[in-house]
Length: 283
Image (cartoon, rainbow, N blue to C red; front, side):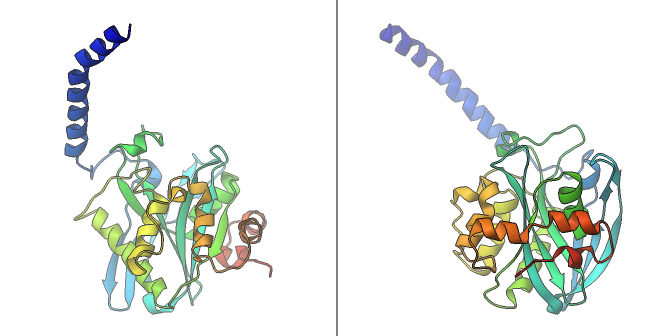
């Protein structure tokens, strides 16, 4: 029996190898699409124009989603930010209710004048696509950076999806690192739609691993790119806490309790100073 089994394997091994080679070549030749029938919230791309110490971010997304997530109310604005006036950087995590091992993570920048700018790294999907972890390991979705108003990205997650949302203060080794990270992210955002389009990848180019690359670019070797928490992203805040990227001495469960914004987000709703009001973190 073993003889016949080995004979069958040897017979089909060249065919399997040939199919695998064809698949690898096909994946390697796929080009990142720049045009497509994109999902509405991913249809308009943000861009940045630098001018000395200021940057104009075009198409800052400011959607509202009600009464359900599918009921989108599109809006965008252009805004100029003073790069010398970054007051604080925030690390946001949204563990998914339907998948306890996964989460979306993004970064938000607070300015001295009360402005907040969120940068969300995502898979750009067409209207007939549904995100799949497995398809995300292949060259299926373009990588995209979305510049968004915090009320867009936080109200959706906390008030509409009812996912837990944690907004952690980032510990910066140097005050200028906030500016360096934002400039690096905005530069990458521009590259993706001009000179260096890239594929999203579930393992190596997802929201969390991409943020880690920006951190490592500013402080080399700060986060191991082989950490499993970059893949099972629901634990990404634990990784950030272990590497002292979150500005707290609390253990992770107490930090999550303190920096959860769900109750305050539900309480204040969609108001102009939303971002300030939800940061009602008790000492």
